[in-house]
Length: 314
Image (cartoon, rainbow, N blue to C red; front, side, top):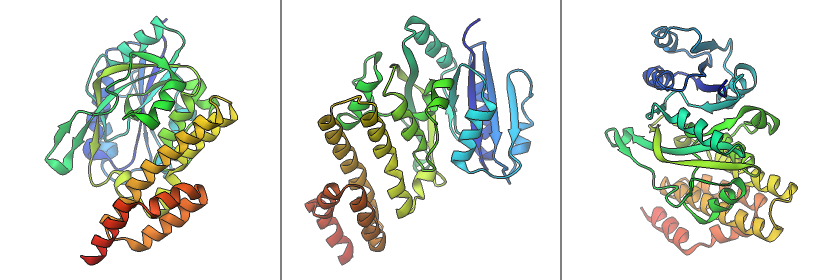
């Protein structure tokens, strides 16, 4: 019997895009597959959209009695609804674009049983640019397989991304690691980056999914407090690596500083661009509590100071 796979689709008020997500999951040519949709008490026409599909052996639909929230719904999918050996989480506004992806991923695992995560690239559908489809620039230098710990280090030195909607991972290992434990926007990255500290990963160098970028993406509406909290996606995996003695401490410290610098620079630049100076000062205060040295570098960055001055003069 081939390994069982669940494609989990957590959704909330995504009726406009949900049919494409479900259809793309059902179209996968892998035989031992079940698609599980968890409707987080949607108030739009999600129920009507799902009635277009025949529930049965290939598709299970679950509706939450009350809204659990984005991360809460992820957890319900993984811990209560999933039962397969392997799972892939596909948000209700994304979709798969390669019908054979799950088959290819399982073949990679069967060739090398030490692999416990497979991922590929996801194209970005820019609805803010008239539906322009952009192939990713990340992962250009990745090999077909590598130790997860090596991939972890590459996050600080290369343009590398674990696209959540392409990650096929082992359900039991994920549950043991308390996946989706952090109620932050990058709860997926926080979990996946801890996951790859052990085991090997396989990379399929093709676009197999589409990530929709639109005005309702959670990443587009983050408050300053949420941006600070989201830095947990960097600090928590670093703490896990330290606790597991995965790397020398000096290597980890350099990794952490590099990752925090890039994330904080991007956040602060965005706050300055919006002329949110109250948010700017609140962010620096939060960053100082996490890493004082990076806070000083951000505060006195010549490029950011110049941007701030120009923004104030506008």
